[in-house]
Image (cartoon, rainbow over all chains, first blue to last red; front, side, top):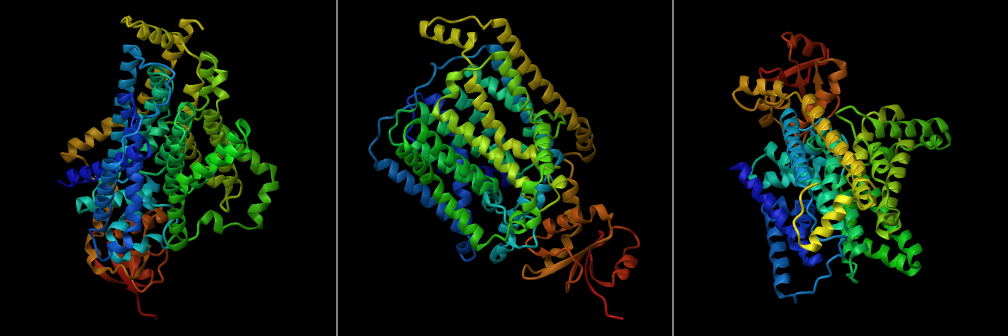
Length: 477
Length: 141
């Protein structure tokens, strides 16, 4: 019964996300493809929106325990009512590179098998660490417990006595919300949330690559994603890094789709800002992600079109991000204790800016991460250039504004991470021990999407398009 | 580009994905888990859950308004882990990383717990019979 009620809570989050996206993005002509893209986006949006609702209504919930449900119920009624009365719009479906191409049956079997195996490994990891890894129970799940158990003492969740009490609340609030639905705590709450983002990332990457390129390359992208064992290990560990990677990917997908869309209203760009904002609600690094996307969107449109277009694009992006960032700011100002990295700044940390040894230590650590093969920490970025050597590169793709914006954002985020380590008040060696694989996981899914987009047209893909157009069935190659 | 090269590239991706999945499965030790499931007659209790249950008798005694201290007789390298676990267990009560509080959550799993507690200048308020205690500072000599 507990699990059923939590699944119901989950379903409500998905519904809220779906309604929100339906308002923000008209549905597509190519329904089946869009369904598989809208499903993970709706899940991400719904989890984000319901966690925000939970946080904002905590003060009211001290006196009115059903305040959260009321807030969600009203939002469903409001959005449904709006959709019922608005005129139906003509859609502006993004032009796709191909018709609905069908990959070979062998590739479908391989990809399906890999996905099932990844789910099996996810389950094994979850059973081995039922409360998640160290960070999960000491930071994220403990915060969820404070929010759920606390009653009028929910503010204890932000005590300076706690380990990283300043961390944003998307994960803890989502888990606490599911417990509230169930009426009791359960490990299923954390598992479901972790599974949603793990599966959602895979589905989002494959669906986006399918729409932007082809089914063939989409499944290849999915296989490369799952090759990083750290993705499954940390995905099941109930921490916030895979969710952060999900929101970064979502923002990137929408910016890339904007490139191919004929929609003049720039809804896609505003929605990208919304998902980048949710990254900031997930982890502090999300603030950097938000800023990186905003900056690259401004720059790329500035140079690609003109200054006015650049500023307009950045403002449109900001229009989606700012509402979320205001809530993040409220949390930081009204509740969160000081961040340890900011509070620990001193002349000593600033001195590292002119210490070449520190630069080299961090570069070495990042380079090592690209080739690392330990099961727990592997994000084999070095494979991407190897695949490029085999398949080649489509230089035309690299010049598209969307590609440049997203690639530029990834680069700025990486540079930002570099400076976070450079200016850490902690011992640099200690600080570089654990975080790099998790930080690279933020970038991994989006990097794979860019890799897929940069691949040249390959014969199997082209032949499928020709055969689809000719209407003749093709024997699998 | 030759189809052979493409096919080899795709095969390489599939093989690497398969090898990664296999390595991860081996690392996760599924047979050890299966053995635990068989022994437990179901999904085995997680070590964190077992630790939490030690403190069940203390929950009713604690007030979310107070901040309690922490003391434990464990390896120094594991002290912080046990402190964080205790905080995780006793939320929403705040647990400070120090002994100097009016009440202290204690974890003393060994048989000579009483001596260890006394050595720290503490007295037992509640003994859960599980190694978990609620303590208070003893009288100043």
